[in-house]
Length: 553
Picture 1: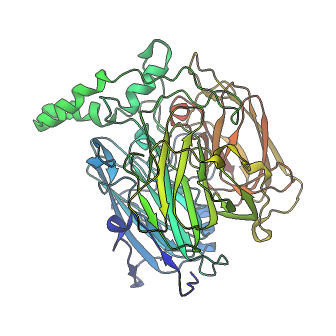
Picture 2 (picture 1 turned 180 degrees about the vertical axis):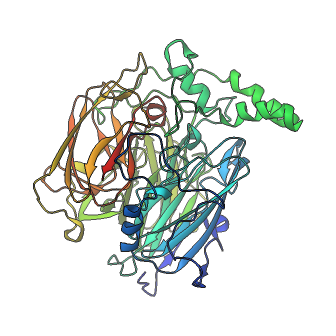
């Protein structure tokens, strides 16, 4: 990355956890720089499903990866384990990467090969998904679709070329695990960075309930279903029909008799005592209806409660690049920095024509990069839980005083101009051409809150089903939201053009589809394999709102 003399890349609060995490490794020539790295003795995974499709490790996938090239290898290790986490004055028992929330910052340069070893020290299976990254299919982390889930006690090496710069997110892709602390920011730097700025602030948003008064995400999911206790008939996020993530407290209880651990038994006993977390009075004008259905007790910025916020320090006049990541599971955030306009430069890692805004609306797993010029003083960065009660707060300060804004601060900017993704235009360097689509896919988003039967075309997820595309096609995907809820839709392995005010809109991988509206997305089928399309509301996807796009031979 180009580094002006005054620039510093501030990584706090991830710095301590992430320092020394990355290291360059020279190649001995004994193995391909970006070849398959499955666990020893494990054959390439072949999922259930019809024949005639490109499987995750087929030659077409390897050829696409070779075309991305391979630079220096960056070695990273993350360990998923039960942890005691400090949320800024409140300790909770949950699951995390490297015992931190968010997990350690992972950072490479475009063209590097990331070799990330995930150690599973949980009591149930897990995977890791590099959200938004156009990578090789067998490194995508979709359990039972692109890989067998990683068993407790085992390691798996995710190895792929990070070809495109941007702001991304690493997270578990099994069951309700992402509604804990199994996530981490992932930044791919541009070696020819065109933006000029002095400092960088990485801001990770989250909604939190795990470990609060006995709540677990699995228990809350059961509360949302009819009767409040009906067992699911399908698996976890990307899992097969038999899979169901039980969660840290339940699984710890199940293992207590084997391990003899009293703390595990006590943890399990808490699972059934959590309060009712169903939100029944949510409404959002921006989201054209309900904001969500889960009443989270806390909202975090960079892992901290608003009563003890993280503080970003700089000098007046500094130009700051803020990378904002919504790692939440059921909450859109309206984000503003008090007394500062923002200039949007990127969405989901891809540059856009710069657009001034007062605030942002960020759905789950969306990312926005903005530039601000710091004024003199102390200013709250507020992430308002859209349509819900509560907010996350962090602080920008340029003075040396001790006073901070009140935890209930609400900048006026939150109620001013908000530029939605459909009004953004792509930078010329990443704009798709106006090629006529070769294939039209039309998928209805279906389900109701009353039945909690979320799916596509009135069907829940089945790993064996495919929506067929062919390599080289321009595909037009029309999503018709036939529900009363908004849904942040994510396509793995690709970016699409959001056809809003322009026939070639901003490049994204995750986008909000409003209730009773349709959204038209164009993408190029240039990354062979089997790829998930799903809602990134974790409670919706776990209930069935997922499907698979598959490349035909």
